[in-house]
Length: 166
Image 1: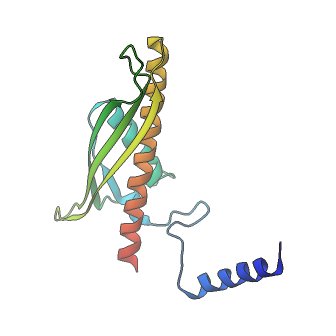
Image 2 (image 1 turned 120 degrees about the horizontal axis):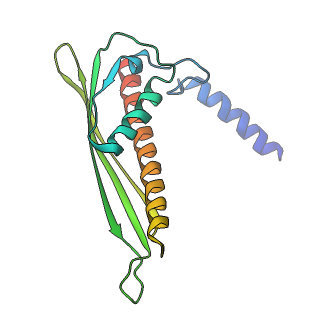
């Protein structure tokens, strides 16, 4: 590595220290926002809603500590599939699955809406010749999409709480 690159890295390190940069999430076992443990996630209809809710419960409160609930998170989940690649025989060989959510964070005591947002994730999967294989890859695509959506909601809530702390 050249001397110029080393100097540039050292300068970048000092520049980020002086500008007030701070990570949104702490590293280690500590939770960065205690408010995450105070969020009640309302049940989401159907099996995919349950999976999304479980991902969010683990992301927002990985230690499982029970605190007095202050916030209520309502989520509406929808999914759609579109065919992409089509053979000459008019059969699709690839599909996109779009997982969309609208969510709203409310304060419980006065039911005031504090933050609302959306998250849309598109995942692709192959449509195979055997029906079971296609079901298996579609299930995997749904699982990947729900995990991505839960991470997106977690990040958006983290940004919201970081703004009110600063």
